[in-house]
Length: 420
Ligand SMILES: Cc1cc2nc3c(=O)[nH]c(=O)nc-3n(C[C@H](O)[C@H](O)[C@H](O)COP(=O)(O)OP(=O)(O)OC[C@H]3O[C@@H](n4cnc5c(N)ncnc54)[C@H](O)[C@@H]3O)c2cc1C
Image (cartoon, rainbow, N blue to C red; front, top):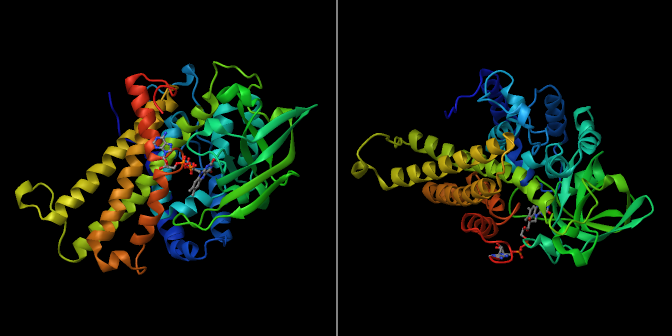
């Protein structure tokens, strides 16, 4: 049976997230888009204290990616304590609400972020406890994940950053770029960066492992913070690792270089984070749709549902197509997240959700600007900002093209060597 009804407790939490988005994010949205590198500390502090009071599941500070054991599987358990069992699904729901408010601010909220997702996906139970527990203990902290390098993005198997064992430490050397929340995680808070480095370049993908590098670790330096097109409230950092030493128990998971093990930790991390990025896109797309719908209604041109298609205006037809795109992306996203909660392999579905949502939000926000005419293009309203914020969903966590290629590989049964 398919059940899309959420428990009253989850609906109440979503209402609360919507109120945060509307009352706390929207009013400062333009300001922190324009003042790109300034930090909205009042907002961070308020979000952090609120996060401490929330239950499991629907809260953005919880690390996604924890796959449930079979015995914990939800038996259609959305009711009662279902929120704990459907953590990834509910993270997507809260993400959509908050990104309806502002995607850049959402990415900058103190939370384990992509770094937490990597710990959850690749860490041992002891490491998850050690590194993620602190996020629940009340100090504002940020997590970030650094894979991309000046010479490698889509092809993450080409990572050149190295980790060399020296006694009971690893010594990390290399440069990472475009690291979301990297500045906050590395410098400004009690946070951490999960950096992907190779133990053995001759081993290819199998040699690449994630390492937790705590904030202020000597040898880790933020050398640049990017100026960007969109999501400008979120910091995107270049981080240089120069003989940066971490204890050996900061290597997440096993140090064994297993040639058949491949890239599974990176993939497991993406399986968890792609549905969340898709949910971000859906939040931004919904913001644009809501704005256009209200605008048309205020100007005595409400969208007329249920009438014959031949009587629809061109604007109504466009709007309905935008709505369909958004709903299709949302269903794919919920499915991918739900599968993860059920402990099912979701790589195909996670890429489908990410590819569809990235494309949908790009189309929806561009169309929203177009439908509103000069107002849409002006800075009087946030629609042009949402168009700029939307595009990143087609780039990070695997570009549109890369996700389509993963989908093709999985459906057609090709390996990454056969189809690239
Ligand atoms: C704002 C922002 C935040 C980011 N945050 C993070 C982060 O937190 N951590 C992190 O590690 N990285 C992050 N990234 C980096 C992001 O993941 C990469 O930019 C992305 O993976 C693409 O890599 P690239 O930039 O090297 O582009 P390239 O890989 O050089 O790709 C360029 C173009 O070629 C296409 N292309 C590449 N290979 C193929 C192929 N085989 N077939 C078809 N088309 C292909 C791509 O789709 C793209 O359109 C961020 C980037 C941005 C802009």
